[in-house]
Structures are given as structure tokens and as C-alpha cells.
Amino acid sequence: MNPNPTPHAPDAPPPDFSGLWIPLVTPFAGGRVDHAALARLTAHLAPAGIRGFVVCGSTGEAAALSKEEQLACLATVAAHASGLPLLMGVSGSHLADTRDWVCRLNAPGLPALAGLLMAAPHYVRPSQDGVRQWFTELAAASRAPIVVYDIPYRTGSVIARDTLLALAAQPGIRAVKDCGGDPGKTLALIADGRLQVLAGEDAQLFATVAQGGAGAIAASAHLHTRRFVAVLQALDASDLPRARAAWRPLVPLIEGLFAEPNPGPLKALLALEGWCANELRAPMQPASQALVERLIALQRDGDLPLTAPAAS
Image (cartoon, rainbow, N blue to C red; front, side):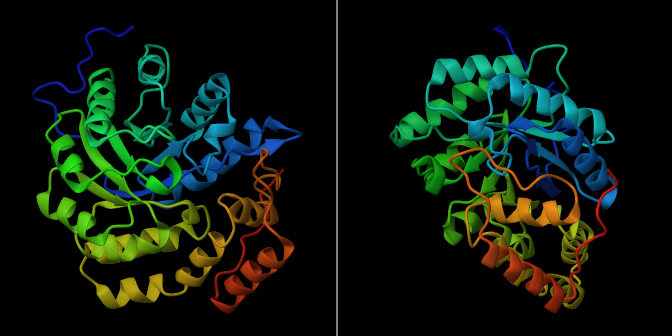
């Protein structure tokens, strides 16, 4: 499949992954994907000033979805995203199988993708040469550009600074979602300038963008989306007082949303707003009632009220 991919035409402008991307939750109802809820949520978030959506990322519980369910989620989001760009999450540990999946995602007839959000191989913990081979071969198989997902605490694979800088020379690799936990590596990538750096840890959004990062992929931005957008807009305008004023009330909420495994706390609040059921796929579990009550209080105390329930 797709034996001679051409990720970018020679005269095409480079892809732009700047701004705020929302990694969508996957709503469930009775154990099945709730496509009606996914459609409503996508349509609700699309006009809020975001850059685009991530489909089937870790927040979307992609590890618990079959390939056919992932494709169905992509179709639903594409139909309700008002033309916004889409990133599709990709992960695995078997190179040939993952290459086949990448080719399938690039096949004619599927929604066009702005890029693939691709994690390092999980569990097997390859050498840095193995990590470079993984991304290089998968980028060569994809017409859509690659956003490297650096998240060692999920994959078990560390992507070293030198490895990322080497991957930046590949024409099909254009950005990194930075969950690496290494501020020095973050700054080195920003200074190098070849990869757009997107904050992947929500609490690092302000610092990353203030230091020259391109944007963020932030699960918390399902909530109070326009305020998150306002933070990025103020930083882009070098208006630090306005950026700080918009950001500070969000920080306790962000910390609370990740006090238990994501997306449990987020889905609990989305359920209270009426956007989806408070349902996850095992072994993921709903957030504790104590945390939900704490999150409600944090929003109230921070003047971040829940929105009115969505129409059914």
C-alpha cells in the first residue's frame, strides 16, 4: 500500500501546527462509541478559536478502540469540525503493522489529515537508533506530516534531544508534542527552530509558548476553551499581563483534571455539562466523587462556571 508516498510537494508551504489543538475524548454509551455525542461536542468546540482537533489520542482512549472504531471516530469528527485541521493519533510497537496502519490512514476516501500524532514504540524500549528508524520509516510511509509525540511515561521510550534534532532533518517530520519532562530539551528544540514545539502537558502551556513554542495540545481546553485561546492570543501579542490574568484561574483546574488518570476527571465534568456520559472503557475508571466535587469547587472559586447543559 502507498509504495511511493510524497509527504509534501517541493513548492508547498510547510504545514503549520501552531495554536491550540483539542485532543477529543471519545464518548461512550452502553459500551459503544456515542457518535451523536462526539458530533455535538466537536461542533460545539470548533468555533471557539482553536486550531484543530486530535482524534484518537490518549485522551480519546485510543488504546481501547479497535481500528474500525478509530476510523469511525475520524469520520464523525471530520463531518462536524467545520473544516478545521485534524491530527490522528498513531501508536504501536510492531513497525510493519504500524506502517500498514499509517498507509491505511493516508488512503484515498478517508478524511484528509493535517498530520499524524505519532508516539515512539511502546513497551519494547528500543535504542535511540531504533527510535530514529521507527519515525523515519513511518514518516516515509505517510503523505501526512508527522507530529512526534514525546511521552516517555506512557511509552517507556525516551526520545533523546539529539534524536529529536536528527529527526528534524526529515522533511515529513514537522512538530513535536512535548511531554518529555525535560525543560532543557524543550528549549533546545525551540531554539533549533526546525520543529514546531507544542506543549503536551497542559500545565506547561504558558511556559512553553512564552519561550517561543508554537502552541499546545491540551485536553483541559475542552472546558473554558475560549479562555485557553485567549491565553495563547495574549502571549502571541506579547501582552503578558493579559496572558497571566487569563491563565492563572486555569492552573488549579488543570492540576485537578490530572489528579486522577486522564480522561476520567475531564469526562466527569463534560458529563455534568451534558456533553457525554460519564463512561470510560475498562480498565479506565470514572473519577472519584471527591475529586469531582473538588473540581466543581475549583471552577466556582476561580469564576470558571460550568456551561449550560447541551441540548439533547
